[in-house]
Length: 258
Image (cartoon, rainbow, N blue to C red):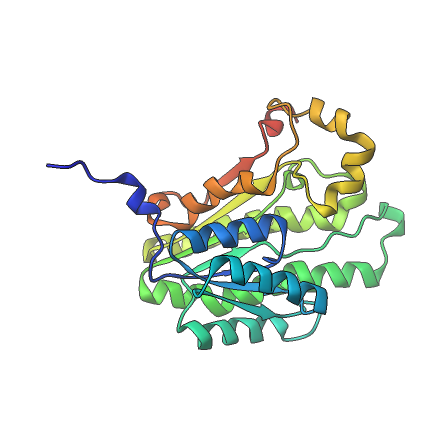
């Protein structure tokens, strides 16, 4: 008698995943990985022509089980419309990966209302709107996965990221809250927190302080977007069905040096 294959629990055939901010880097790596294990993937981008081209490339790499959706979360109602469009296209959303966000670096004395509102609209309200639109339906069906992409900023905030780091801490709190509410209905909710990852957002910092940043990482290197893939697949699949309310750092051990 053959032993059961534990890797089968990572398969997502028949499941639909919405990954926000999926046109490049971390979001793209997760979206492509979900597609590779059988999920139908809604590849969200912010709606510009350049982002649409990137998203189309992701869709092409995943294949027939993927579709791109543009939504600018700075616009009123965009997140609600995205949830409705993805649900209409695929029938339901089983997996929600909340990756899209913006950060505006400002010293505390220079934070202005426009920058604050922009970060709140894109980071906080869009997250809440998608959770409201999709998570109760997951619970009603008895299966769902929510993964919020956090940050080491949630516990070690940089001085010029007061608003952004506060959002990441809020998002972690929401993951715990929703895990308490929905895990009994078959929906797991977890926060996946990357450390220093080589992305366009971090390129300037890495170029200026790369050696100093590496010195703070026990693994001795800057992370790559694909370093998030293994943890994301665990948390999005049946393999992680007994994990909920967790905060998982993918940071090369940096959190232990904070």
